[in-house]
Length: 381
Image (tube, rainbow, N blue to C red; front, side, top):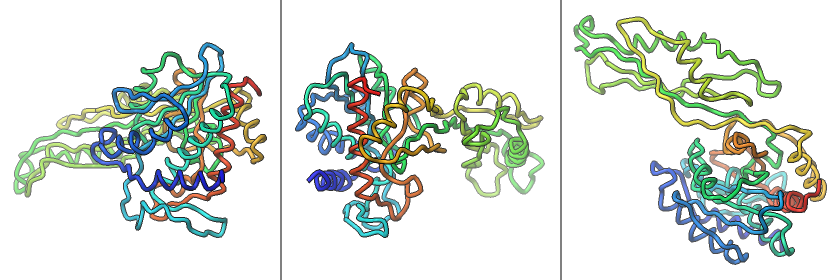
């Protein structure tokens, strides 16, 4: 019955689409998923829920002031269906490794969400909680910024001691993840008719010089034992004006600067800005974009100890993972809250056309989540 309940819960989540659009966190479908699909199930558990200014759901149970608390964070937004056929049927399929649920978001957000719901229900049903349990279902999931979780944290009376970011990690503990600072670099020139280009200043020529220099720039960071070197990657380029036979007066290049654990995004951005310049007649402008903080927990620290214990009590092997992608664990660590990403779903399937998750991984992680809640709120190691 436990397995069938989890499958049905996951299927209900997948069959209520909540895809990323240009509206991002403000998309009505995402808020409808939270309010119409998720919230009623939490109320059935006996939880009182509320919403913050961004529409993020917040639920709390158990006593405060005990020194024992944990926060679980889930995500409503999924990647768009894109080229995935039949993305919202949530059908059961047979794979060489066992039965799986196929559908958009199962490898990333929605399977971890189902596992969290079942674990919370089990903890509440068991009886009086020994500490404070906080759950938030945010409007984020694909935005690449901390805005949603920051809004949630402003609505809490006190910070939790631990935080669990419920996202697909292949059921491995993401003890570390890279962060990211995005920035745009705008090379400015002067327009002219392309029949007489000497009357203008071609921004494309300036952009080529900038790209050459950025390929050689020293980021000034030591390699990380797991991640290796920090990276700087151009991800988009656009010239303007969009007109025929015209020398462009601006080229905008977007960069992704991945941050290693311990790096400060403002310092990383400033180093690049100070290291790269361009000679006249061009000008260059740097515009900083969204930030996500890196994270790394100590393997001899209290959270990892509780996680290892939770895996053991659930009867599952405890494995570690270092993630190149970023989510909200770094935001929590920035606030002094130990946090990891952990959940069912394989990272290699994110955004793919054949996204599926093993039922056994869903059931197993729900058990681990429950044991972690017990360990954190009982004070057990």
